[in-house]
Length: 136
Image (tube, rainbow, N blue to C red; front, side, top):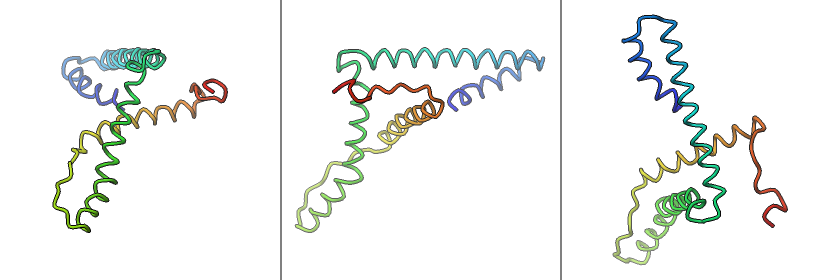
C-alpha cells in the first residue's frame, strides 16, 4: 500500500512525460522493483538491529511501543479514572494531558508491522524466536 502511494505521483509524471505505453509500464515496473529492493534492505537492517546485544539498539522499537502504550493507557484509561476521583473528592487539581494524535499515528504504524508479521505467518515464512527452550 505504501509503495502504491509512492508510485501514484511518479506514475502520473511518467504519464505526462513518456508517450509510449510499453515504456511507461516498463518504467513503472522498474520503479516498483527499486522500491521493493529498498524495503527489503530496510527489513534486513531492522533484523540486524533486533539481534544487536545492546538494549539501546535492539530495544528501540520495544521502547517506542511501551511509550505509546503507557501514553494511551494514561489518556484513555487512567486519566478518566483519576478525573473521576478528583470530582468525587472535590479536589481542584489539573491532570496532565497527553496529545494522543501523534501517539495514535505511531501506534498504528507499529501495529501495521504486526499486520506484516501476520501475513508472514500465513505464508509460513515467519521466524519464531520465542520457542520454549530458546530463552529459558
